[in-house]
Image (cartoon, rainbow, N blue to C red; front, side, top):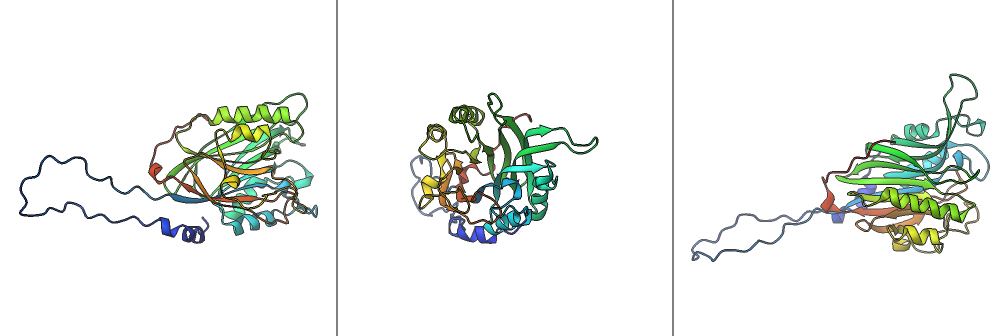
Length: 301
């Protein structure tokens, strides 16, 4: 796995555990009355994690050049621990050279990966892999379990999904989600957000949601999801946070969100030449009191 020294140095001041003197007895005192509970021991320090959301536009930049190595370099330079990716091709078509883009990025970055196929087509020729389009989650930490849930869809609108992965980051279990909501129907997005809230439910673990939600912060869709989750940009970002488009940013539609047991310390929109969206990254702190906590295993889809 890639080094995390830079990320850890940012949080080094929070990783010092105070030392306690234990079992000290003062001699020569009269027998004391029954003692009440002693002072609570120190809580475990919070754990840093850098999370990115990135719509990679099947690896094609504003120059229309297909180049996954640009995407990989930008992710590597970001020092992200977890990345939610949208618009990821898997043997899809000539536009992406029929590549398995999720696996290619995982290989280049030495990260773990899971893929959620929201469009799933027969191969062009018998015996070739199925042609798929969807989302992916990259993680430095091993992925314990995962599933992809198809979201509500009407008529001929594109099938969307919610990809979920359970990872343990520096001892803290985290349930990571990524999604890409419908771009041309607010009614559909509202239904999809309702389905996402139902899937997330009341988890035992901390939750991080990344995604291209195709909705600005002042919309009913975002108001609904932020009843459950905190928008990291609203908590820690500076400025408008526009992520669309990469060449002339005018709207914030890409998000990192989290449950309220997680704290966002910074949020930033990063530059790119590899996609038509700008990636957004957030430095989060996971709750130290969940170190070593068990997790609720869900059946795979």
